[in-house]
Image (tube, rainbow, N blue to C red; front, side, top):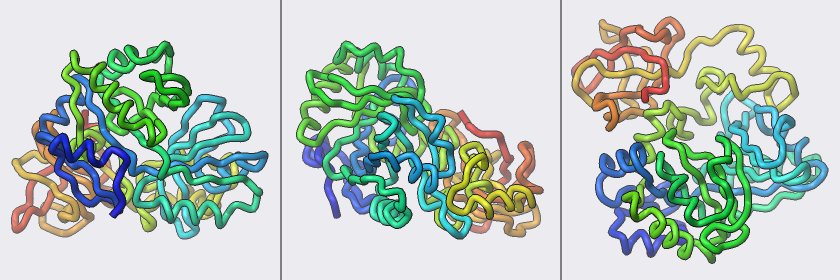
Length: 358
């Protein structure tokens, strides 16, 4: 089990540490509910240093990224970030990721912790462009400072005008008297804020500075438990739950980052699938009765016939009702459609809704 650079800090704060994606990670410090509301209404900090970061450099960098990812990275300019995914050769998804353009010959790829080795091997195996690749995952600390008061917190620590950083853009500079920090207007909570990439040697100093700056705003450390409810309220897919090597990216609603204006791995087959029409779709649903729609619970018709299963589910702290996602036949995918979640021997009524939930 790997540990992240600030492992001892989290233990000292009383975090409950759990195995996650091969790392020992803080799942909560106080309660998932309290931490969720802290991020939605104020500011919280997630240590997500388990994520993977690759540098791709050289004249062949863009060509390699264009081949292995479905989105069109050629539209990126310096300081822009793009959400994308790596299609596999059989119609599924190797991983979803962020593509950062530093300059025309240097890009950063940010991948999921559980897939670092798999993604690295996949991209290397397709690197016929001679791009230089470097895996810097173990040398970085990644802190997600999220919530409506994130800007006010971090602005105390830098002369960079953070309010000028548009969503999905980034800059590098000095933060908390630490140089060479990458500050990105991204995050997987839908609450606004930034992701701060700092070298591991500076991680503890950065953590302390952020918490001192945010003290007046009631800043709190936040664990993976609240990260999951926050992303689900926004309808964001989680790799391993809602998308994986076997799920079609088009059925998962990732058509918007699938650009058939270029060739990429398996693009011909995915284009043919789009032209044939999809047989099922990933939908969001809200429970109309009291209950918790947990992962792998069956999704059914009124007479109990199975039509799918829950891929992600929880009680929404904001809506105070059960919400979830799952794949259903397209006939059941229209918002307003009545479906049922099988909880033990009961069928709980639910309704397909347009995401995000919040």
